[in-house]
Image (cartoon, rainbow, N blue to C red; front, side, top):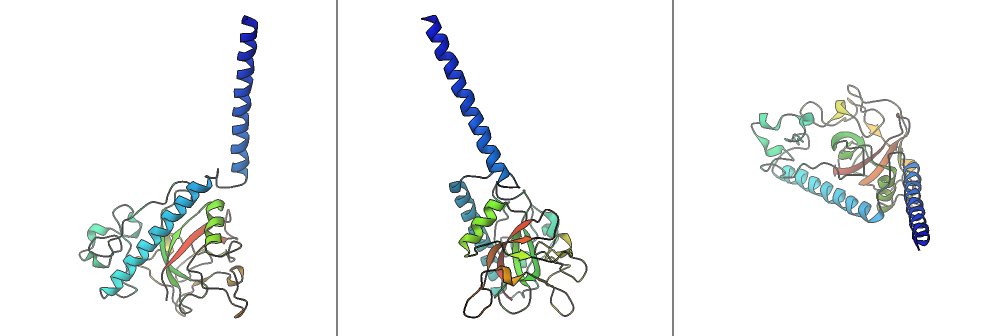
Length: 248
């Protein structure tokens, strides 16, 4: 009887070891398929994409509200108490042009949901013209940097992009040049010192429009207000999500 009990105990131990090894193998496969780390399940991804889309819609409404209150497209500001990269909100005597102030756009400042990027904060730029959006001027966009391949692929599917659109240049933003990646970095932030990179005085970033889905009738890229773009000639070939807050 004791022998049978020991055999059953050994068998249970072997089964538990096998289950654990299977779990490790699954995690390794997921990690290897996503350079930024392990994937999240489809339901979690759907929830987080919905959070992102709701948030950028909130930001878009805040920008519109500020404009309706008489401010120009150059006067919009993104200072907030959680992130001093865009200025000191407490130092602004009149915050009614501030997206994240209750007297301005009244949007809440939020971090990105977990698991969809490397933890980078939202950025706001006026240096890139997107396909079919407004005129040839650069648009005001919100950018979530360094998103995962999983998030990038799904958000592009939602926005009718069969592949990953690209920025193909290699120069970084500097001075009056927006560079070749829609994630401009600290020099390109839309703040009280730098707004739009309007030609001819400035050089804007232009994405590779041929890498976006094309309209077979016009032969041009469809209007794309939201997508994930890969900067293919930058270190790590990062992927960045954008949403147009103000078409120009």
